[in-house]
Length: 170
Image (cartoon, rainbow, N blue to C red; front, side, top):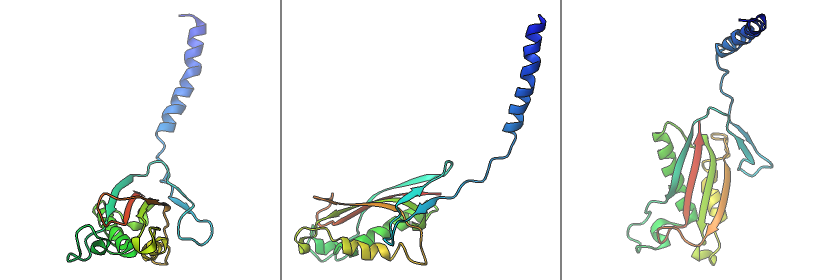
């Protein structure tokens, strides 16, 4: 073997040792989820989820029946937007709890609202916000998700005004 080849091997050895030493360094603690809010509206403008976090996706959920005696397929059977949003958020809280999480761990929320016949077909954003504000933005639970709210023509169940899906992170 020539001196030239041996020289390369000798120079390469410190780099191999340095690399092995770097791999033995313990991992840094996971960074925290960062939520930023602009203004006072109880929705995060941005949520940053650091690498290494576990994401949990919760399917879209509809409200439970509020008045079984009301006609099938009627809004009255499930309640107004506020009642339906409250029901859905309770169901989401239960699904998250089963996964070892809570509403405080939600980082993204998508809300689909059907226009309320009592409001001339306009979505009841105020009703949604009354239910939402019981769960988000208060002193007891200040963690705000980023959120999108849209009005849709219909949902899979007649009489349903609200569907919500979320992504949570730990």
